[in-house]
Amino acid sequence: MINNTETQKGSKKEALEEVKKGCINIGGESEEAKMCEIQKEFTNGIEKVLEFDSSVTFYGSAIITEDHPSYKQAQHLAYRISKELNYAILSGGGGGVMEAANRGASEAGGKSVGLTIRLPHEQKTNKYVTDEIPFNFFFTRKTTMSYATEVCIFCPGGYGTFDELFETLTLQQTNKIARFPIILLGVSFWEPIVKVIKEVLLDKYNTITPEDLNYFTITDDEDQIMEIIKSSKKRDGADELI
Image (cartoon, rainbow, N blue to C red; front, side, top):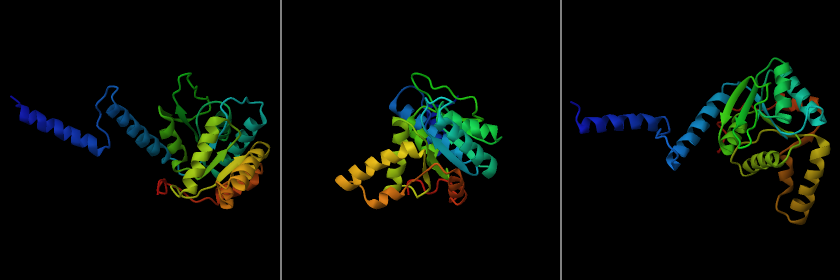
């Protein structure tokens, strides 16, 4: 017969092993269970993206159609990056610009990665994703998308794209992550926005410095972007949250 003391020792040992893994699997809908799920998402997501030797992450609108110039631009650039440089292409795995980037990588025969998110209205994973990494939480997904990528490319988009862009800029500005290239693809879209940033934030209110405008490059020149990517520093996530 196994007494209660032996049972307790066994339970503690199992719990200790779970703690070593970074999470106690307690199940249910408690706050502790949610924290466990968050921990697992971070661990799984980061392990997966680190499997790709080099990568470029695309951000942009989920609702533009394949006949939109931004769709075609992202698709062609992703194709070149995948074909010529053999970099994995990462996106949010949904439609619009995300689909375009994954499509370009898929057509080039490269790695087309979708970091997908479960939403109430159900975001559908685009058919060009070859490797899917699923998430429940936006913040775990956002961190993973930029965790080890060599370059981030921001195409025209809405609130989500701006959220991802300004978070990345803030983390670099505050030295919470090391500098890596941020490219704003689509001059006609981004130049008016940066003009407002300069005239209002910098010139009128002085809430940023002139140096803060140097964290990104606005361009439509694919050859320039390819050179930026080729000269970018190899990242493995070690510079995250430094």
